[in-house]
Length: 102
Length: 264
Image 1 (cartoon, one colour):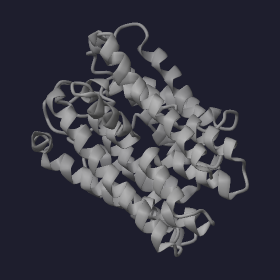
Image 2: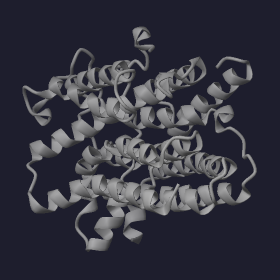
Image 3: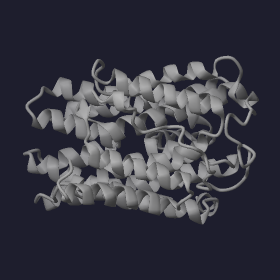
Protein backbone atom coordinates (compact mmCIF):
# COMPACT_ATOMS: atom_id res chain seq x y z
CA UNK A 1 0.00 0.00 0.00
CA UNK A 2 1.84 3.11 -1.23
CA UNK A 3 2.25 6.25 0.86
CA UNK A 4 0.13 8.24 -1.59
CA UNK A 5 -2.85 5.90 -1.08
CA UNK A 6 -2.60 6.28 2.69
CA UNK A 7 -2.46 10.06 2.39
CA UNK A 8 -5.45 10.18 0.02
CA UNK A 9 -7.45 8.01 2.43
CA UNK A 10 -6.39 10.20 5.34
CA UNK A 11 -7.29 13.42 3.52
CA UNK A 12 -10.70 12.13 2.45
CA UNK A 13 -11.48 10.87 5.93
CA UNK A 14 -10.39 14.16 7.46
CA UNK A 15 -12.60 16.07 5.00
CA UNK A 16 -15.65 14.13 6.26
CA UNK A 17 -14.66 14.90 9.85
CA UNK A 18 -13.91 18.59 9.51
CA UNK A 19 -16.93 19.47 7.37
CA UNK A 20 -19.36 19.63 10.28
CA UNK A 21 -17.30 21.83 12.62
CA UNK A 22 -16.22 24.11 9.76
CA UNK A 23 -19.72 24.69 8.45
CA UNK A 24 -21.06 25.07 11.97
CA UNK A 25 -18.54 27.87 12.44
CA UNK A 26 -19.81 29.67 9.37
CA UNK A 27 -23.52 29.30 9.96
CA UNK A 28 -25.31 29.31 13.25
CA UNK A 29 -27.38 26.16 13.35
CA UNK A 30 -30.79 26.52 14.93
CA UNK A 31 -31.69 24.38 17.89
CA UNK A 32 -34.02 22.38 15.73
CA UNK A 33 -31.22 21.76 13.23
CA UNK A 34 -29.02 20.61 16.11
CA UNK A 35 -31.72 18.20 17.20
CA UNK A 36 -31.94 16.84 13.68
CA UNK A 37 -28.20 16.23 13.64
CA UNK A 38 -28.36 14.39 16.95
CA UNK A 39 -31.26 12.30 15.67
CA UNK A 40 -29.36 11.56 12.47
CA UNK A 41 -26.30 10.44 14.41
CA UNK A 42 -28.43 8.32 16.75
CA UNK A 43 -30.13 6.64 13.77
CA UNK A 44 -26.75 6.00 12.11
CA UNK A 45 -25.40 4.47 15.32
CA UNK A 46 -28.47 2.24 15.62
CA UNK A 47 -27.93 1.07 12.05
CA UNK A 48 -24.28 0.48 12.86
CA UNK A 49 -25.37 -1.73 15.76
CA UNK A 50 -27.65 -3.73 13.49
CA UNK A 51 -25.11 -4.18 10.70
CA UNK A 52 -22.15 -4.89 12.96
CA UNK A 53 -24.18 -7.40 14.96
CA UNK A 54 -25.50 -9.23 11.91
CA UNK A 55 -23.21 -8.76 8.96
CA UNK A 56 -19.68 -9.76 8.11
CA UNK A 57 -18.28 -9.53 4.58
CA UNK A 58 -21.74 -9.10 3.07
CA UNK A 59 -23.21 -12.19 4.75
CA UNK A 60 -24.63 -13.27 8.10
CA UNK A 61 -22.01 -12.84 10.82
CA UNK A 62 -23.04 -16.01 12.64
CA UNK A 63 -25.03 -16.92 15.72
CA UNK A 64 -22.20 -16.50 18.21
CA UNK A 65 -21.86 -12.75 17.65
CA UNK A 66 -25.61 -12.30 17.27
CA UNK A 67 -26.27 -14.01 20.60
CA UNK A 68 -23.58 -11.96 22.32
CA UNK A 69 -25.12 -8.71 21.12
CA UNK A 70 -28.65 -9.88 21.95
CA UNK A 71 -27.50 -10.55 25.51
CA UNK A 72 -26.02 -7.05 25.58
CA UNK A 73 -29.42 -5.61 24.63
CA UNK A 74 -31.11 -7.52 27.47
CA UNK A 75 -28.44 -6.44 29.96
CA UNK A 76 -28.84 -2.79 28.97
CA UNK A 77 -32.60 -3.06 29.42
CA UNK A 78 -32.17 -4.39 32.96
CA UNK A 79 -29.72 -1.56 33.64
CA UNK A 80 -26.57 -3.60 33.97
CA UNK A 81 -23.42 -1.48 34.28
CA UNK A 82 -21.48 -0.71 31.10
CA UNK A 83 -18.51 -3.06 31.73
CA UNK A 84 -20.86 -5.96 32.46
CA UNK A 85 -22.70 -5.40 29.17
CA UNK A 86 -19.56 -5.31 27.04
CA UNK A 87 -17.64 -8.09 28.77
CA UNK A 88 -20.67 -10.39 28.83
CA UNK A 89 -21.26 -9.88 25.10
CA UNK A 90 -17.66 -10.72 24.26
CA UNK A 91 -17.48 -13.63 26.72
CA UNK A 92 -20.69 -15.26 25.49
CA UNK A 93 -19.58 -14.91 21.88
CA UNK A 94 -16.18 -16.39 22.72
CA UNK A 95 -17.68 -19.31 24.66
CA UNK A 96 -20.16 -20.09 21.89
CA UNK A 97 -17.28 -20.17 19.40
CA UNK A 98 -15.34 -22.44 21.74
CA UNK A 99 -18.36 -24.75 21.69
CA UNK A 100 -18.23 -24.79 17.93
CA UNK A 101 -21.05 -22.37 17.20
CA UNK A 102 -19.93 -19.98 14.52
CA UNK B 1 -7.21 20.53 29.64
CA UNK B 2 -7.45 19.45 33.27
CA UNK B 3 -10.97 20.80 33.47
CA UNK B 4 -11.90 18.44 30.66
CA UNK B 5 -11.05 15.40 32.76
CA UNK B 6 -12.79 16.82 35.80
CA UNK B 7 -16.10 17.03 33.94
CA UNK B 8 -16.07 13.31 33.15
CA UNK B 9 -17.90 11.40 35.84
CA UNK B 10 -16.63 8.07 37.12
CA UNK B 11 -19.20 6.01 35.29
CA UNK B 12 -18.13 7.46 31.95
CA UNK B 13 -14.45 7.28 32.87
CA UNK B 14 -14.86 3.57 33.51
CA UNK B 15 -16.63 3.16 30.18
CA UNK B 16 -13.81 4.98 28.42
CA UNK B 17 -11.19 2.81 30.11
CA UNK B 18 -12.96 -0.34 28.99
CA UNK B 19 -13.28 1.02 25.45
CA UNK B 20 -9.54 1.61 25.42
CA UNK B 21 -8.81 -1.96 26.47
CA UNK B 22 -11.18 -3.46 23.89
CA UNK B 23 -10.05 -1.20 21.06
CA UNK B 24 -6.42 -1.66 22.09
CA UNK B 25 -6.77 -5.41 21.65
CA UNK B 26 -8.40 -4.96 18.25
CA UNK B 27 -5.61 -2.54 17.32
CA UNK B 28 -3.03 -5.14 18.35
CA UNK B 29 -4.59 -7.63 15.97
CA UNK B 30 -4.77 -5.02 13.21
CA UNK B 31 -1.05 -4.37 13.42
CA UNK B 32 -0.27 -8.07 13.55
CA UNK B 33 -2.55 -8.95 10.63
CA UNK B 34 -1.13 -6.19 8.44
CA UNK B 35 2.49 -7.11 9.10
CA UNK B 36 1.76 -10.84 9.11
CA UNK B 37 0.18 -10.41 5.66
CA UNK B 38 3.41 -8.96 4.31
CA UNK B 39 3.01 -5.19 4.69
CA UNK B 40 5.89 -3.13 5.99
CA UNK B 41 5.47 -2.22 9.68
CA UNK B 42 5.12 1.51 9.04
CA UNK B 43 2.01 1.05 6.90
CA UNK B 44 -0.44 0.00 9.66
CA UNK B 45 1.24 2.44 12.06
CA UNK B 46 0.89 5.42 9.71
CA UNK B 47 -2.65 4.38 8.68
CA UNK B 48 -3.73 4.35 12.31
CA UNK B 49 -2.21 7.73 13.04
CA UNK B 50 -3.61 9.59 10.04
CA UNK B 51 -6.84 7.70 9.34
CA UNK B 52 -7.79 6.60 12.87
CA UNK B 53 -10.89 4.66 11.87
CA UNK B 54 -10.80 0.97 12.67
CA UNK B 55 -13.33 -0.30 10.16
CA UNK B 56 -11.79 1.61 7.27
CA UNK B 57 -8.28 0.50 8.23
CA UNK B 58 -9.27 -3.16 8.29
CA UNK B 59 -11.10 -2.77 4.98
CA UNK B 60 -8.16 -1.04 3.27
CA UNK B 61 -5.54 -3.51 4.47
CA UNK B 62 -7.87 -6.47 3.89
CA UNK B 63 -8.47 -5.39 0.29
CA UNK B 64 -4.77 -5.01 -0.43
CA UNK B 65 -3.80 -8.28 1.28
CA UNK B 66 -6.45 -10.23 -0.61
CA UNK B 67 -5.03 -9.02 -3.92
CA UNK B 68 -7.33 -6.08 -4.57
CA UNK B 69 -6.10 -2.88 -6.14
CA UNK B 70 -4.96 0.07 -4.07
CA UNK B 71 -7.68 2.21 -5.66
CA UNK B 72 -10.33 -0.29 -4.54
CA UNK B 73 -8.84 -0.32 -1.03
CA UNK B 74 -8.99 3.47 -0.72
CA UNK B 75 -12.46 3.69 -2.26
CA UNK B 76 -13.89 1.03 0.06
CA UNK B 77 -12.35 2.63 3.13
CA UNK B 78 -13.60 6.09 2.14
CA UNK B 79 -17.11 4.77 1.59
CA UNK B 80 -17.02 3.20 5.05
CA UNK B 81 -16.03 6.58 6.46
CA UNK B 82 -18.83 8.56 4.80
CA UNK B 83 -20.84 8.23 8.03
CA UNK B 84 -18.23 10.45 9.68
CA UNK B 85 -19.69 13.38 7.70
CA UNK B 86 -23.09 13.38 9.46
CA UNK B 87 -21.30 12.45 12.70
CA UNK B 88 -19.09 15.53 12.42
CA UNK B 89 -22.16 17.73 12.27
CA UNK B 90 -23.64 16.12 15.37
CA UNK B 91 -20.57 16.93 17.49
CA UNK B 92 -19.55 20.20 15.83
CA UNK B 93 -20.53 22.15 18.93
CA UNK B 94 -18.13 20.28 21.20
CA UNK B 95 -15.22 20.55 18.77
CA UNK B 96 -15.46 24.25 18.04
CA UNK B 97 -14.40 27.03 20.35
CA UNK B 98 -10.64 26.97 20.05
CA UNK B 99 -7.85 27.59 17.59
CA UNK B 100 -7.48 25.86 14.23
CA UNK B 101 -5.17 23.18 15.66
CA UNK B 102 -7.67 22.24 18.31
CA UNK B 103 -10.38 22.20 15.66
CA UNK B 104 -8.36 19.91 13.41
CA UNK B 105 -7.41 17.52 16.22
CA UNK B 106 -10.97 17.44 17.53
CA UNK B 107 -12.27 16.61 14.05
CA UNK B 108 -9.68 13.82 13.80
CA UNK B 109 -11.16 12.30 16.98
CA UNK B 110 -14.63 11.91 15.45
CA UNK B 111 -15.29 8.16 15.62
CA UNK B 112 -18.30 5.95 16.30
CA UNK B 113 -17.35 5.65 19.95
CA UNK B 114 -16.61 9.31 20.69
CA UNK B 115 -19.79 10.44 18.92
CA UNK B 116 -21.91 7.86 20.73
CA UNK B 117 -20.51 8.93 24.11
CA UNK B 118 -20.85 12.64 23.40
CA UNK B 119 -24.36 12.77 21.96
CA UNK B 120 -25.77 10.47 24.64
CA UNK B 121 -24.37 12.61 27.45
CA UNK B 122 -27.48 14.31 28.76
CA UNK B 123 -25.74 17.27 30.30
CA UNK B 124 -24.57 19.64 27.57
CA UNK B 125 -21.77 21.00 29.75
CA UNK B 126 -20.18 17.59 30.05
CA UNK B 127 -20.45 16.67 26.37
CA UNK B 128 -17.22 18.35 25.43
CA UNK B 129 -15.25 16.77 28.27
CA UNK B 130 -16.56 13.30 27.45
CA UNK B 131 -15.76 13.70 23.77
CA UNK B 132 -12.20 14.91 24.31
CA UNK B 133 -11.40 12.47 27.10
CA UNK B 134 -12.69 9.52 25.11
CA UNK B 135 -11.10 10.72 21.87
CA UNK B 136 -7.63 11.29 23.30
CA UNK B 137 -7.67 8.07 25.32
CA UNK B 138 -8.80 6.04 22.30
CA UNK B 139 -6.28 7.72 20.00
CA UNK B 140 -3.45 6.82 22.35
CA UNK B 141 -4.53 3.25 23.06
CA UNK B 142 -5.42 2.53 19.42
CA UNK B 143 -2.09 3.72 18.09
CA UNK B 144 -0.04 2.02 20.80
CA UNK B 145 -1.97 -1.18 20.14
CA UNK B 146 -1.31 -1.05 16.40
CA UNK B 147 2.37 -0.24 16.86
CA UNK B 148 2.88 -3.09 19.33
CA UNK B 149 0.98 -5.50 17.10
CA UNK B 150 2.98 -4.44 14.06
CA UNK B 151 6.34 -4.72 15.77
CA UNK B 152 5.52 -7.92 17.62
CA UNK B 153 4.66 -9.17 14.17
CA UNK B 154 3.89 -12.69 15.28
CA UNK B 155 0.31 -13.73 14.89
CA UNK B 156 -1.32 -12.23 17.94
CA UNK B 157 -4.18 -14.52 17.22
CA UNK B 158 -7.66 -14.04 16.05
CA UNK B 159 -9.53 -11.54 18.22
CA UNK B 160 -12.74 -13.23 17.07
CA UNK B 161 -11.91 -16.08 19.43
CA UNK B 162 -12.07 -13.53 22.26
CA UNK B 163 -15.48 -12.37 21.06
CA UNK B 164 -14.18 -8.86 20.49
CA UNK B 165 -16.24 -8.54 17.32
CA UNK B 166 -19.31 -8.62 19.58
CA UNK B 167 -17.81 -6.03 21.93
CA UNK B 168 -18.10 -3.20 19.38
CA UNK B 169 -21.87 -3.50 18.78
CA UNK B 170 -22.32 -4.17 22.52
CA UNK B 171 -20.57 -0.88 23.35
CA UNK B 172 -22.89 0.96 20.99
CA UNK B 173 -25.93 -0.85 22.42
CA UNK B 174 -24.98 0.27 25.92
CA UNK B 175 -24.52 3.87 24.80
CA UNK B 176 -27.28 4.31 22.24
CA UNK B 177 -30.21 2.24 23.53
CA UNK B 178 -30.87 4.56 26.51
CA UNK B 179 -30.85 7.51 24.10
CA UNK B 180 -33.79 6.05 22.18
CA UNK B 181 -36.09 7.76 24.64
CA UNK B 182 -38.90 8.96 22.44
CA UNK B 183 -41.21 6.99 20.20
CA UNK B 184 -40.11 8.93 17.13
CA UNK B 185 -36.41 8.35 17.57
CA UNK B 186 -37.10 4.67 18.28
CA UNK B 187 -39.04 4.45 15.04
CA UNK B 188 -36.30 6.27 13.17
CA UNK B 189 -33.64 3.93 14.58
CA UNK B 190 -35.70 0.84 13.80
CA UNK B 191 -36.51 1.94 10.24
CA UNK B 192 -32.93 2.98 9.62
CA UNK B 193 -31.58 -0.33 10.93
CA UNK B 194 -33.96 -2.30 8.74
CA UNK B 195 -32.98 -0.29 5.67
CA UNK B 196 -29.28 -0.75 6.47
CA UNK B 197 -29.50 -4.51 6.98
CA UNK B 198 -31.83 -5.19 4.06
CA UNK B 199 -29.84 -3.03 1.64
CA UNK B 200 -26.53 -4.71 2.52
CA UNK B 201 -26.65 -7.25 -0.32
CA UNK B 202 -27.24 -4.48 -2.86
CA UNK B 203 -25.00 -1.60 -1.80
CA UNK B 204 -21.25 -1.19 -1.51
CA UNK B 205 -19.81 -1.46 2.02
CA UNK B 206 -20.47 1.65 4.07
CA UNK B 207 -23.50 2.82 2.11
CA UNK B 208 -26.10 0.68 3.94
CA UNK B 209 -25.34 2.48 7.20
CA UNK B 210 -25.64 5.82 5.41
CA UNK B 211 -28.94 4.68 3.88
CA UNK B 212 -30.29 4.33 7.42
CA UNK B 213 -30.78 8.10 7.41
CA UNK B 214 -34.01 7.40 5.53
CA UNK B 215 -35.30 6.37 8.96
CA UNK B 216 -35.42 10.08 9.79
CA UNK B 217 -38.73 10.30 7.92
CA UNK B 218 -40.14 9.09 11.22
CA UNK B 219 -39.30 12.52 12.64
CA UNK B 220 -40.53 14.52 9.69
CA UNK B 221 -43.73 16.00 11.02
CA UNK B 222 -42.56 17.83 14.09
CA UNK B 223 -39.15 18.81 15.36
CA UNK B 224 -37.71 16.11 17.61
CA UNK B 225 -37.44 18.58 20.47
CA UNK B 226 -41.20 19.12 20.41
CA UNK B 227 -41.63 15.42 20.99
CA UNK B 228 -42.71 14.77 24.50
CA UNK B 229 -45.20 11.99 24.13
CA UNK B 230 -44.06 9.08 26.21
CA UNK B 231 -44.82 6.66 23.47
CA UNK B 232 -46.47 3.32 24.03
CA UNK B 233 -44.32 2.70 27.08
CA UNK B 234 -44.14 4.96 30.10
CA UNK B 235 -40.94 6.92 30.24
CA UNK B 236 -39.54 6.70 33.74
CA UNK B 237 -37.68 9.98 33.69
CA UNK B 238 -37.80 13.33 31.98
CA UNK B 239 -35.78 13.58 28.80
CA UNK B 240 -33.63 16.36 30.09
CA UNK B 241 -32.62 14.45 33.16
CA UNK B 242 -29.18 15.57 34.28
CA UNK B 243 -28.37 12.03 35.35
CA UNK B 244 -25.01 10.90 34.08
CA UNK B 245 -25.18 8.10 31.60
CA UNK B 246 -25.22 5.20 31.50
CA UNK B 247 -28.24 5.51 33.71
CA UNK B 248 -30.29 3.15 31.73
CA UNK B 249 -34.00 3.54 31.61
CA UNK B 250 -35.97 0.33 31.60
CA UNK B 251 -37.09 0.48 28.03
CA UNK B 252 -38.48 -2.42 26.11
CA UNK B 253 -36.36 -3.57 23.22
CA UNK B 254 -36.92 -0.96 20.59
CA UNK B 255 -34.17 -2.12 18.47
CA UNK B 256 -34.34 -5.85 17.97
CA UNK B 257 -30.89 -6.71 16.72
CA UNK B 258 -32.25 -9.16 14.25
CA UNK B 259 -35.34 -9.48 12.22
CA UNK B 260 -35.21 -13.08 11.09
CA UNK B 261 -35.94 -12.07 7.52
CA UNK B 262 -32.95 -9.80 7.55
CA UNK B 263 -30.56 -12.65 6.99
CA UNK B 264 -29.09 -12.11 3.58
